[in-house]
Image (cartoon, rainbow, N blue to C red):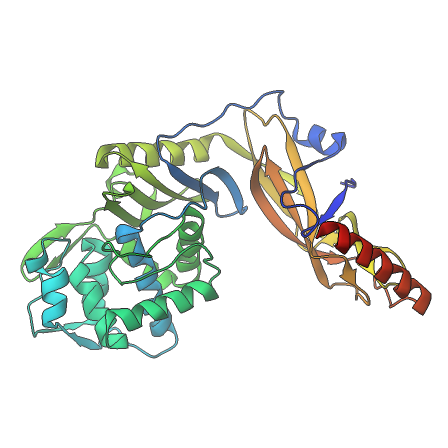
Length: 396
């Protein structure tokens, strides 16, 4: 589906919301006005995994105290070590006095009731952390892997940066209140998706309904699991500062959704709002194929090339989910760090296509150069240099 619209370099504009031409709008045929979804959550985000479409976002980049949602990052570090062969499920970890006192029965917090000075297999600790939200289990793992919680938190943050979690910071393995500890809904969605895709053999633990340790059986705290809506993960959390929170995942009818929300007033409201958003996401959207792989979608400005621009094309087919009730506007932008210096080879990834529903970024797809462009003659490079100097002076 050929179309054209103005492209924009990232340094030129902080926000890009440029209208698609009428042909694209007609292809998805949205009504004049969209029906807005409302949630009582202060922060929320909903992702359709298959298409990569963000179906809903409300304050997704606002940092909040993570509470037990930090345990998702704790488990990612453990799963990564298992996958790399640095740990095995049969490794045993010692229950220190610190773990028992800070996160165990003596703490009055979520616990698996690990006995002090006992040794526990890693598989049982994982089940304790995931199913029972065990703070003692987290500390036992942290101390066993890194020697201390502080050192383990460094590992958490290193992995977080590697995974692109730009708005989160971890101070401990449990999510217990600590200054400087924060997550965002966008990062939690990214982390949950990574765990599902990278560690399917470990993700199964999140759907376990109950776990017994030290003679005490506790049920999984995820309220979505018993609803029979296809839920199989992930985690809940609560702090006085940010209220009740959840990261949930549902798979049914050939689709999978992941939701993250926080700032709710009660456990009941958390369960209701999460289910309402997941049901809406399953029922209120339909897929629309916008482009095939290789479709050219516009041009990107070049610096010092034999030509002033190069056409860009989609690397993969682009399908997005559109609301059945439509959107008041479907908008897009070609976004790049530019101008892009020549030479550029055909197939080089040099830009991204951003699709917006209203003001919310719903989808991002990589773009590659559709042609090769060599470096231009000296006079062309000099002219581009003068132009860039002038624009840079205006920009500053």
